[in-house]
Amino acid sequence: MAASTSNALNWFLHRITGTFLIFMLITHFWVQHYDHQAASVTHEVVTEQGAMPDYPEEAKEGVRARFGPDAEATPYQVVMQRLADPVYAVLWKGFNILFLIVALHHGFYGLNNVMTDYIRDPMGRLIARSLSWTVALGLLIIGMYSVITAGW
Amino acid sequence: MAVDTQERPAPTASQEGATAEQDSRFQRYRIRTGMFAWMMHRLTGVGLVVYLIIHIWGLTALTDPETFNALIAKYHSPIFKVGEFALLVAVAYHAMNGLRIVLIDFLGWSPNQKKLFWTLGAVTAVIILVGGWPSIYSLGEWILGPGSMPTLFL
Ligand code: HEM
Ligand code: HEM
Image (cartoon, rainbow over all chains, first blue to last red; front, side):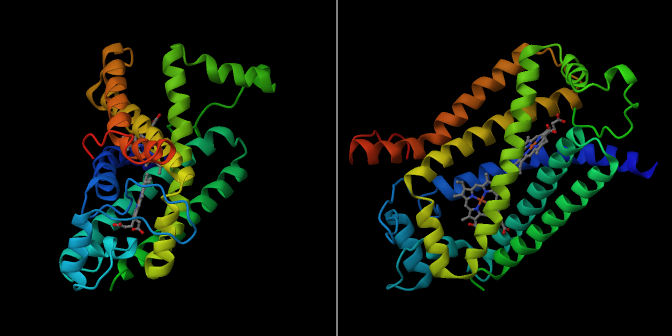
């Protein structure tokens, strides 16, 4: 049956995507939380309505270097250091899209495994499967759109 | 476990009852720790899918500077700092247990490898402490006042 070959392939792919995700999540975590110039999230708690986090000196310098001496280090500008560059951004956008595809495939394939374990009725399984992959496809399109158009 | 169960033989009449079916599903996992590890893997996996959906949805803010600033400012609220730490715990656990499963599947290591289990457990603890330090630090600074937390490697 075609379904069983594709299941074996998907089972294999799930292990591969999982392994890939380790490296991609390390990169993502580093870039969003640790790197003093590029991290979008700072080591600060902000409680006031409308207040912005204060970025480290490295981030302020980076933003000024790219967007001019008056540019302010807002969260958007900090992220745009990577995503608005004409050349370098291709790498980051490419990385983000690859990350998006791999995470969605791994996550939704896994979700389908879980659902198949609890939904006994074949019709119910079919509905759950179609619905979840539709959501995944929608997220893929939305995600690609946001990351490609960001800063361009 | 995660292999599609479509081709599973139809349940016999004696297993039809809800309790009997529950029993048979769980009795397959003889190692208690292993079963717990699997349940947590499933729980964190589904949790991460939920986060991923919210995350991608939220990132549509990338198309507008004001909206994106508001989103990232929200990421700095105290509840999110706690959530961020919880997210890291889920990711670290799921990643290391997933790595354990992949090593067992591909290298043919025995699932009984206690050493592998506890080594990866230690690695997970280190990832949570080092990776979670930014969240712990910011919450500490906020609760105990500026300068009260050691910066360490930040
Ligand atoms: C960080 C690296 C990751 C690795 C190494 C990894 C590895 C794995 C492996 C090997 C499985 C199969 C478990 C089995 O067959 O019993 C699995 C299941 C799963 N993973 Fe991941 N994964 C990772 C990240 C993620 C992420 C980011 C998500 C969510 C978006 C996710 C969601 C799931 C789900 C929902 C399952 C199904 C759970 C089940 O069948 O019980 N994983 N993962
Ligand atoms: C608190 C932790 C996190 C923060 C602050 C964060 C922040 C961000 C930001 C700002 C972006 C925009 C793109 C960029 O800056 O390059 C992004 C993209 C992305 N993140 Fe995260 N992230 C976090 C955790 C995660 C986790 C745990 C996952 C996986 C389940 C994930 C998956 C993704 C994906 C797939 C993209 C690309 C989205 C797209 O292409 O539209 N993130 N993240």
